[in-house]
Image 1 (cartoon, rainbow, N blue to C red):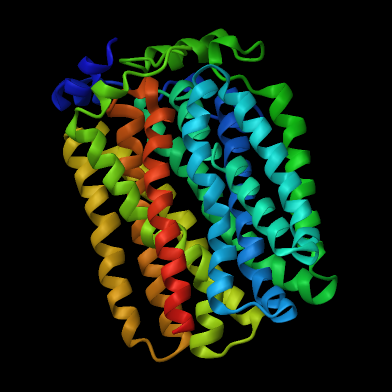
Image 2: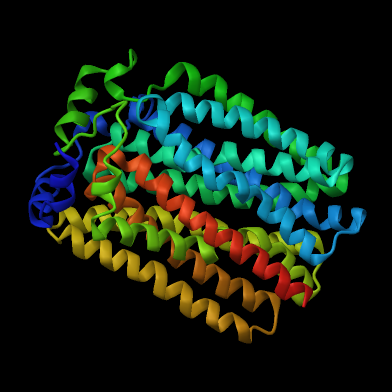
Amino acid sequence: MATESLLLRSSSSSTKSCCTLSIPQSRRAKFGAPTLGFKVVTLMACVMCLCNADRVVMSVAVVPLAYKLGWSSYFLGIVQSSFLWGYIFSSVLEELCGQVWSKRVMAWGVALWSLATLLTPWAANHSTVALLAVRAFFGLAEGVALPSMSTILSRWFPGHERASAVGISMAGFHLGNVVGLILTPIMLSTVGITAPFVLFSSLGLLWLSSWVYKVTSDPKDSSFISKSELRSIQAGKTDPPTATADLPPIGLLFSKLPTWAIVFANVTNNWVRILVLLSWMPVYFKTVFNVNLKQAAWFSAVPWGTMAVSGYIAGAISDSLIKAGYSITSVRKIMQSLGFIGPGVSLLCLNFAKSPEIAAVLLTVALSLSSFSQAGFLLNMQVNIAPQYAGFLHGISNSAGTLAAIISTIGTAISYSG
């Protein structure tokens, strides 16, 4: 179906098709016999966990590295933002081949960012230029993860199951913060600075061994999927996205207000939640409340761990409301409102926190509610706004959000140094 019709179709027709469908028995993972779709989303959750854990390693390791190498707060912000220099381009580049080869794009992304993770401590000790180049390359490789996730899940899951699939995958993404924040300080203090970088790069190569042989970009190309499961996937899609080597109609997409709404939502989301809190939370607890690195990591891990659970809950609630007959438009707006207003109020209250415990509670509330955006703008681009170009929309909006994150990350460093 043409993109324009997808952008202009009424929410009532979409709601009707979603509400009349229930998850088929063949799509439910039975104990001892999980479906292939269940395996795909499990692998996706694992790689999303690894994706974020690899980012977090540097946000924790940067504290002893800054002390060892004599970095100023301003330069520390430059190092933190260098990841974004490559990240801003890769989301768009992913679209050039991701529509057809999203599985391969994800595989190459994991392989390359694992290599960059392994090289990071060597680069830090070698020269400033080498470190910034490796971090930018790391961002370039990691930038394909979320757009590839959007494309693959939009093909493997029908609309009425996709919020749950995205919720599970993004739960893995947020758990990556917990894994990285807890393991990195322990390994830094017991083994050394290189240890966490070696560990997480090795896990990336281990994940690749399963992904390459068991997953395809589209379920119809899989030799492992059963006919009944494939029929269930296809029957649950009112407008199945099709792989195409043609570039998407960029002019048409950007002539529509929903596209700009998604871009603005991603900019707002990335400004605070993903990059400022992800990059600076351990530093915040250490500098503001003078806690040690291990304590700062634990205080930082709790909000992200809670967010992993709340993200899945948000997806499940979203799917349930749509099946119960609520308008898709209304459900998306409710979820997005909770995802923006809740964190905004919580972060304003953070100014009055007098202890690390209270700060952790407020940050937990902020991140938990921000996860409702996953069932807002993130699902909107996958299900409602031209789903066959979900990866492209995610890439474009992610690039805009990353530009905002570069500004906010360096701005935070300037405020610390001032």
